[in-house]
Image 1 (tube, rainbow, N blue to C red):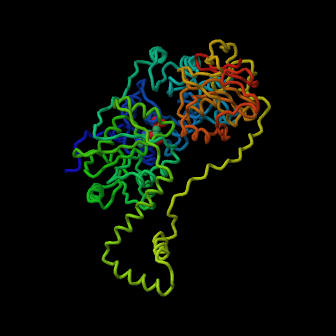
Image 2 (cartoon, rainbow, N blue to C red; image 1 turned 90 degrees about the horizontal axis):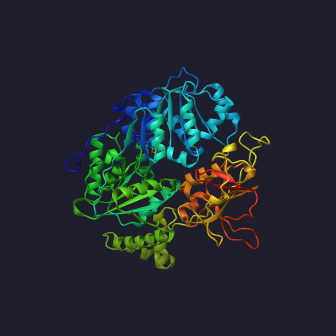
Image 3 (cartoon, rainbow, N blue to C red; image 1 turned 90 degrees about the vertical axis):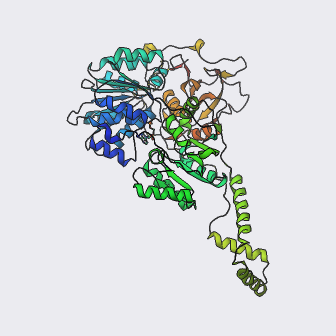
Length: 614
Ligand code: AMP
């Protein structure tokens, strides 16, 4: 077959000895084949080994540990048998949700997220009812252990997710305590994006002969392929893609998505917008696949929406563009994907959509391929409209050579005489007719309407995690009692001119967010939400000052437009934070950073990443 190269067959989920019910759920959610970290991690975890996996968010690591746990869950045991520790409440919720998805066909599995900032009531009733899997942040897990409301005496599986982040956020002691206070014979899986000494030490001390997994990547990309990326939030991707399709000069294109379902959905949406697109995925029978590829080759269709598996080895000369609509899990997939263009010595274009939270995957791709990707600005509304006008002109020019021209010209001349209407108006009326009522020009999107903030729910005057302000708190606002130290002199507020700098020397600016004491926010919730949604690192944060009805947060002064946009739409405790640069007090605003004029709870990070009042 000329259009297929020979590539080694990757394993399928069915090869991995996964429980049939979980297998069915994986097929329901549309995963076609295991990501590299899943293929490497699921077998040893199913075999009972401890595992250390070097993996970041976006690689599919959640399923890598959730699938083996669910495959071996004992529904009869009602006290928690699996505990996943995650650094932030957002990740804890995300992981719990993923477990729920993979457990759809195992009725009766109870999964409970527990994290700081949520009232104890929900968590306590969940724990009382009996749970099989707990996903929690370390601080809140310890709180429950201390209160005697969480029984981990029958724990069989312990997962440390984003272990390096947990340590950076000051959870080392809590994590070690949970590791040592739970049954000796449990199976432990540790996932971390990096392997600092402290994590190696934990692995040595608490894991038994772990299987270490780092997924090696094929890293060479051809020099005839130009590689660019666009920063775009998930919910804007379809709009971004249609702009690219309108403005880029492409011959034919492959668009990569992650799931089978997504190939069908996206192809359908593109067709409804007038593009000639078709889907290929692993479920499509070979004959149909061949037909679709034939259509792509002949130019009957221009756009193929594909999964990695379906497009493996595809070799069609006229593919001028590859769009990574969903960022690939690993560098090797990226290299395979973009190798679908630039065939037969031609030039190729590769475009990568990167959501704020996926920036680290972009960095990993750049590192592994040793090639920086150029940032591309999304075509503006004006760019798109200019292109539409130009294409409209081209279509007129093209139709002027049509055989039917004489016939229509006669009809138009008759009309002109009969109705006494200028020719330009008649031509315009015909153009309107051909649009079938659709708008011709794109209109700029209105700025997002300010939504009404939800009033915070009535809460008891004082909650368990609402310690007195004079004590230091962990990232979840849990009181650390006597461990808390104030690090005034070690804080990261430098600069004699009222400027503050991050731990890596970048200049910080003060931003204002619309949640404060009234909303019962704690520094950890702010750090977690902003870091997650804005793709920031913990080290990017400076002071956090929580005021009665808003908070001030120091973040890098040069946040991109996309990051600012994503952060404006972020919610904490259900409230839109509407992040914006702080314009300071109404008169005589002092210099930024390290100010003592802010009143309220002022927090500063110590070296472990804890936020301490001072
Ligand atoms: P994670 O790294 O676990 O946060 O996963 C990143 C994203 O990849 C999530 O949206 C998952 O639903 C998705 N995902 C995980 N495994 C697969 C797979 N084998 N095939 C397709 N998508 C996957």
